[in-house]
Amino acid sequence: MTSVRRRQPWIAVFVLVTVVPIVAGLVFMATYASGGIGLLSHGWTDAYWLRVLGDARTWSSLGYSFAVGLVSLLVSILVALGALAALGPWAMRRPLSSLWFVPLTAPPLVAAIISVEMFGNAGWLARVAHALGWIQSPVDFPDVLFTASGLGIIVTHVALVAPFLVLLFGRLERHLRLDALARVAHTLGASRMQVWTRVRIPALLRTAEPTLTVYGLVLVGAFEIPLLVGAQSPSMISVLIERQFAHFDITTKPEAYALATLYALIAMSLLLAWFGWRGTRRMQGHGA
Amino acid sequence: MTRRALMLAVSVLLVLPVVLLALLSVSRHWSWPVLLPHAWQWTQWRELLAGQADLCAVLLRSLGISVSVGLLATGLAFPTSRAVARHRQRGRLLALSHIPFALSPVVLGVALLYGFMQLGLAGHIIGVVAAQLIFAYAYAVILLSGFWNERVHALAALAGTLHANRWQVWRHVLFPVARPMLGVCFFQTFLVSWFDYALVLLIGGGQVTTLTMRLYGYFGSGDLRLAATCALLLLLPPLVALVVHHRLPATAVAVHFEVSRE
Image (cartoon, rainbow over all chains, first blue to last red):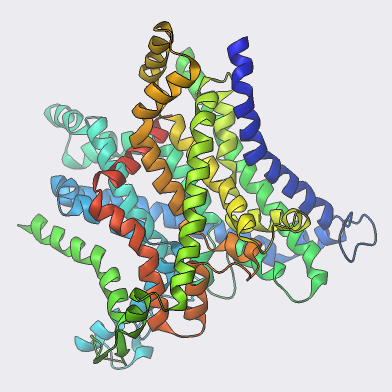
């Protein structure tokens, strides 16, 4: 009992630093969005909430954010698995074993600027295309950035996330001894494709699931990359919140707070639901 | 042979963006459609190395903020992670520590701003450090919780049976064993702060200028030469860590892997 009591101060620090500011911030945002406080407050109201919930922009931005985030993650996984399959043992040998880290050294803001310089209409790839005689002027180069499809955001996300996943999957392969498992599967008559689809990919994805889930949510809430290489409309949710919040018209503040609270509740619910589902699955696994 | 060619191609692709930034930062003229700059200049690098450029002050401020966040997060998270690892509600506490990442820095910044204004922390370096600490500390707790395995607990218990007091257990057993992991944790939490733009923008409110803020400003104003210089400065600490201490990043991925297994 004494040892339990001794550990409590650090749990209190944990709650104080991690939980209290977030809960306090959420309560403040929800109260502001409900007219309870604020410079222009005229008393409690649901008007701001109704305006945000009834605004098509809210739902298109949320849907767009989840779509772009999930597609970015999915493509990153495919690229990482493809690189491991195509490169084989070379993927984790020098110099590649070190070079995969290079994109991880770039902050999202830098990654976005590199994307502009690489994939822009007058960017380096367009210059290469011109040198090869494929295009005559910048307008001939296909639009990658600032498009409503979110292609520029996805490409930049993939450039940052895929190398990390190569490293993660490479280490997992070694730890899970997937080469040995693959040899067994091969001896039992599995083709190379079956070894990947039935042995390697399920084992890698299952073990990396927590990291992938958190990465997915981080990509949905991404800010810097969509801000610099995304379209004006539709915009990712973090960009929309920041724009509404920074708007010169202070009457839009309660709506910005309502939107931020809505997104925070959705993201937190998804994360906690996933943790709950994972816990239940584990319990069932232990039970079995 | 095909794999070797593919490896070379991937290697070039991975390094190309950094080379491109380096070229941009020293180019004087680089107009469409030429592939390489046709005139060069080194002014801002000379001024920077001589300590004259305004960027020098911004660089030092950014380093100060990130080192503070890294030290605070690692220092606080080390004992916290042990308490979390031994707690009955370990899974729930770890789930809670993931919440800041689900929220996104923009939402967290918007949520915190009013409170920080009331506390006089908005527009101040301490406010930026405090806001980034929420992310960095949560991240450090997740990373370090993987450290507290059966072997470490057994080592601490063994020291206890040899009459070591609590302080001695921490100083002579746990800290030396954890030192490589603490190095990784400091490096990663340093980067959480070093890479941040949204919290500096919202909590700093334009009063706290860091390299990411300056980079956005230069890029927005169309000064690509200075933007590229700023971007290279941002890449520098992690690249140096990669070159000087090539084991450090490898451990960093191992940590993610440990978290995956949790």
